[in-house]
Image (tube, rainbow, N blue to C red):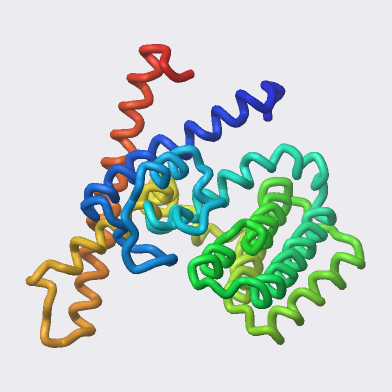
Length: 280
């Protein structure tokens, strides 16, 4: 928290996440004429004021209806915000790579227990989809991010023998249960760690760094772009593979351009608000 206290910490983090997100709430509301463009919970949801308010406050992660119905992919922003609120407490406990490994193990146990409970108690489809996106089920992935922090930023690779056993047990469980998301998460962790150890520059280049600057906007806006691009008649070729390929390239280019504009627009708005002493 930098010694500034919990309040200033939350304010700073909120102003990094939600000005852009609030604009995308407006964009998706207008694009869908007041209805959700793409929702994991329902095919079409009328976006009500309560849904907008919960999303702008970062509380939509607690609502089965509004967790993803306003901004497609917004469910993950809700998870990140909940995690951000808990991070100061977590990092008081997790101070070493060894403790980060144990946190990943605890996160996997949360995921397993939550799945068992939901499979027995949750029969409603909307509630089930919400449970899959809820932070208890997704925390293990955030815990893996914490582990990467110690590997990449702290450069601490040494762990206890107990932690090796825990990692092996997790890998065996994930392999046997065929938890695809967890499998890919561990694969990505392994690749990133290897690149870090070898100091490979494959991902450290000007293009990657430039795209990384706009990655948040790209994540939030790609569904909006796809919603329009995929309806353009000139992208309808006889060969569907050509159609998919051209559409993908057009969507990628337009998404990046839109994201750069959105990033700069939010920057201008925030600087204006700062000059008026509305935000600090």
